[in-house]
Length: 218
Image (tube, rainbow, N blue to C red; front, side, top):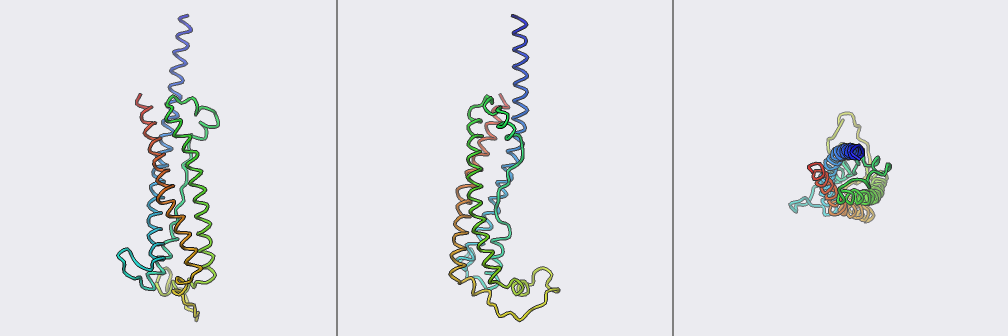
């Protein structure tokens, strides 16, 4: 009987050690996810401000944009598009091995299950966002003179760009109804990510980290 008790005690310590290792790995994984979602939220906020300027033709102070400012705002709206990249880590191993159900913290298990749903919802919304982004880019590639913009803006390797005799009026495109409709849809999906999907993802991550810390401190 004593030998059995000792064996059970050893097994219990071994299980506790394994769980601690998993928890520490999860903590590192979700700290990386938290840093990533903060980066994406900042990127999304910046891109949406630029989108709003293009749609309204005004800056944040309500001043009408110059032709060059309007074109620059449009470029900024696409320069750093938001996309969340999940940190590689131990969670998939926990799921595949069936160990997730063995974690002692019930709330942590619940939040990790919620994470799987939330991250898929974010990916689906991001897929829609990138589809709208591609439509805007296709329109601009077809109708817009990037050469003319770069020369007027004096950007990049300006001294190496040879002007051509294009008669394209870049600015008039921003008053084109087709582009306006595409930009509005692009902005609406981005706004949805900004206000709902990314904040929900961040909240989920923070709750997971809080439960991990609680488990490690017990």
